[in-house]
Image 1 (tube, rainbow, N blue to C red):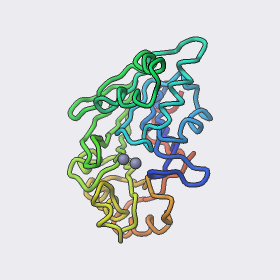
Image 2 (tube, protein in one colour):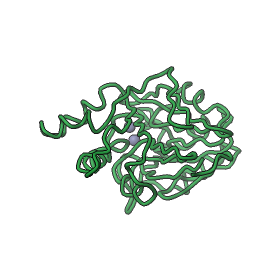
Image 3 (tube, rainbow, N blue to C red):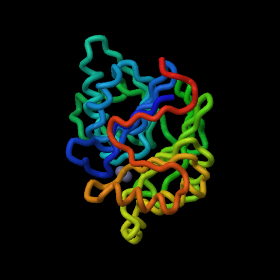
Image 4 (cartoon, protein in one colour):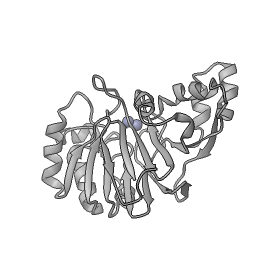
Length: 255
Ligand SMILES: [Zn+2]
Ligand SMILES: [Zn+2]
């Protein structure tokens, strides 16, 4: 499986960057997990959007779903009408998207996207990839996800405060992509809905994750500092997610 980082900035983009999004390619399966503002442009460098198998949105914050809007228009006005893209997102997500659209555009929304509710306790199969959702502790309903295929496993935190379900999602994974919105000294601010660098590292250590990739760092902060803080707590390989970064997991290959 090849993971490509489409965007890694938390809440607002860094110069030239994008908010959160990831492309998973396993065989011929193409799954996008989160599509924050700025991600679609990076996605289109890699694949044809009409060939996506599904898009999964972990929660309805703009830095995680904003580029669903341009994707909607790209699909809607495509001459071949490749409509019905599977869209897995928290309950009411499509209706929430519709609030920003006029009547005409709103009517097309459930035809362009085939909505499926993301919820705890269900396994979603997208081609060769299995996905399970674990509830976050955040400002709105959201889910960390565990993704597995032949010979590999990974987890993505979405946005959350420290949470036993986060550790469960990441238990023993090959790669844990975990939000580290704030430096370790900002624990009080993070308590409102996010993780610090050291809290992300502690979750990765408790879960026994093999490798940690920090994401969702606010552009205000120095990623090098947050990585150094995380590395004091997490003994395995750790890095910082950047747009365009690719990680290969397992032996499934890319078709
Ligand atoms: Zn976010
Ligand atoms: Zn959020």
